[in-house]
Length: 382
Image (cartoon, rainbow, N blue to C red; front, side, top):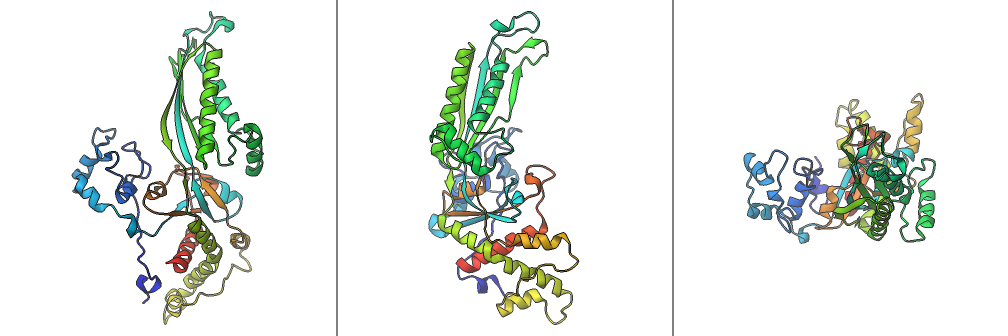
């Protein structure tokens, strides 16, 4: 039997982190922060309260764990102990599926700024206040939201990513060009929210993300400037607050290169996995999967042949002659781990680009391809 120790010369640790999303305690990456050593410093997140009023420390204690800062410090790893961190994650977007590629490699995780915008006008009767003298914050919010979308080159569904990047360059005069730039207004509230009342106030969020912090900074300042000028023109009182800032994290160029090469080479490994799985039931002496590892050989690649219909095309399309290199607009545990060591990520395509939904789906075949790519990377590197 082949063991992990016989496959790799250096230790390989597999870790599954808890609470990446940060829903319960409104703070992200609690699990990975514990490993990195940033759960207590510079801010003591053990004291962070959830919606139920309990702190992280109290919940850990209720579950039989030692929640003291000393215990958390003992969990943390030292950077000298870690050579690198590689994460496999579904893409959470539509790019890989649209390009008919099962896997992609991440070059960077976008930085993020969140703004809250409050616009205050004059509440009034919908039927008696003339349009020309209204101070309507909701109409102003609609104009501002449209301006945010235009600044980030949105609303052009027929424009390719490359074209969007060129148009962004022209629109910004070179001040903020980045095809990864995305801006989102995800929530809006209106007071008092009655159909026959001109609103007295409107509040909305703005989420701005980009691969390059310099681009994001320029766009944030542009958006704030546009909102303030709009409010001045409409005689409204406005308040813009920056409630969150996180810098972009670049993946290690060496890991990007190594993972890209591994994805290219892994189709042969994946084909061997398929052959071994199919042959296992027919071999009585020893399973092909075991035979493959013991012999140190990988079977020749095989795609489904006659009478397999669409599977033939899928297998052909999966050959990774060119591997997409993507920027992750979503945050991942890699963000926290980057404070400890160099990071790399492999994305796996998901159906329809849907994530954070019951419809989220990754095929077993693509999970197998990701496993083969990770195995290939480890054999080449570790």
